[in-house]
Image (cartoon, rainbow over the protein chains, first blue to last red):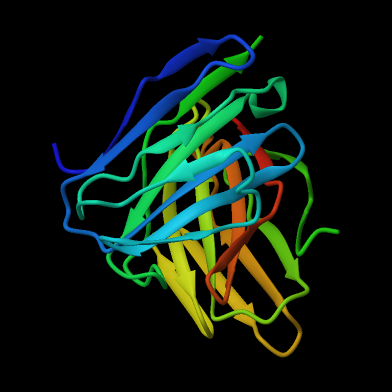
Length: 114
Length: 107
């Protein structure tokens, strides 16, 4: 099925552990992005990419790294997890950065850091 | 500070009612998006607007660039419209989101 695939769906980490959230799309979309969603705060942009080899920071990039070695994949790395990173994470992609054809969201990853 | 404000936060309607959700923003934008988040958490893109009005089925979205305001209307609401509706704006390469409007449509 075409779309955005996020893995894992759920994850529990201990403070200080590292992990990678995976995001893959098979629609040849140029633009990919990561968001976190916290109660009462709405979605916030973490990092985005406008194409392979190009990434940039969003509103809340601290504590997260990304890379875009291929058009299809855009992994999000937590280098040293902190309880403040407990959140629901969404990956999204679109044909162009403006999203003129709409955005496709992954199903989300619920991360708990204890 | 919130670049995007939505109202109301919560809305309960009877099936068949006409619904309006409002979005105001404070930054210069190149596009505004309306998203729908289902109770299970999945997010679907409904509209992208840069001017004027768009219609898709029972959903209508309008934007007034001068007033920095957008509205999402749902005509003949149905229980399956129950969801959180999120307004998002693109400003440069940044995206800012409202906290969402939780809509419940009662049969």
